[in-house]
Image 1 (cartoon, rainbow, N blue to C red):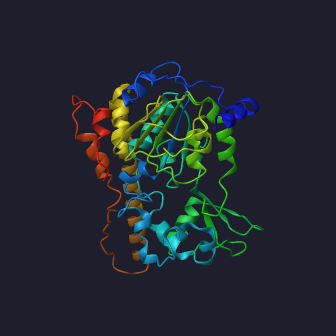
Image 2 (spheres, rainbow, N blue to C red):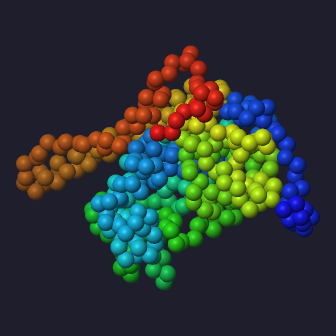
Image 3 (cartoon, rainbow, N blue to C red):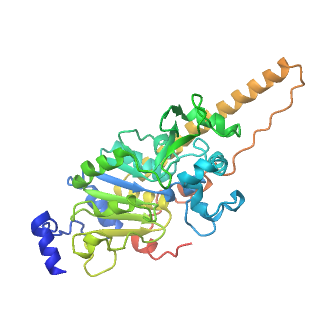
Length: 382
């Protein structure tokens, strides 16, 4: 092993960096203090489904509540088949039925999403790498330049035919899905698929080019709401410089598996507990609570809470206006047809209340301190 380490160090330049401890302490307090240092200019965030669960969107792998545990009604050969490109091309109906239930526009961004926006506004966010396809980062105010949607997005769609590849908009796809129609290309009648990455498809080329340019200059890596189970996204934690601190905000510790380079002593898997730990911090608990705790330590908590409340009010007002407009159009259509106008009852989406987010923003008084890292690290995972 020593021979291999020395060989790679000489020939490839790997391992030449001597690890330096840049955090005063391996706690969320230590991370916050580092973020207030002028050395912390480029923050990269890696996020997964866990940052959207408080919006009502299930994650994938949580036992019982996760998406893969609740797909029985689709009669799939196995849960992951709903996101496999070969299965989709033969049986697209299960995916589009699921897409209708989880479609972007039905949910509001969470505290985590707006924490990302605050990082941008504070000129610290270099990039957000997201596994999510719900577009909530965009709704919260991040732009194309801020985002790398590693697993694609619902924002655009394309014909699956390699000879056509006609692009379609979010509104076009939404109309098809909510009319219970299987989306077919207007030009060639092939299937049209949202631009999300299915198993069996390559990640967007921009993902690889951005990783190459971004990760060598990362000052702080924040990982939130992901099990780090899916490659190549999971491997990104090992691509930051060896001196770069890494903060995990998650229900449980993850990313600790040793990569090949990690086994050779060149970084790799995250190390929270060993005697050699020098840069990795785990804050265990609800992701929204973790972001509020970090924001509190940075002096941003009130600003974050006000941002969430203000933006949610704007989204609610827009949604109410659209609902009233749809009701007015329906009433006019019925009058024009000579039919008696029936009272319109608007059913509120039970998953769109963001009750858990509202509770987080109101249950603690401004004087009440945020949970300390040590308190949350002892929480049991539900």
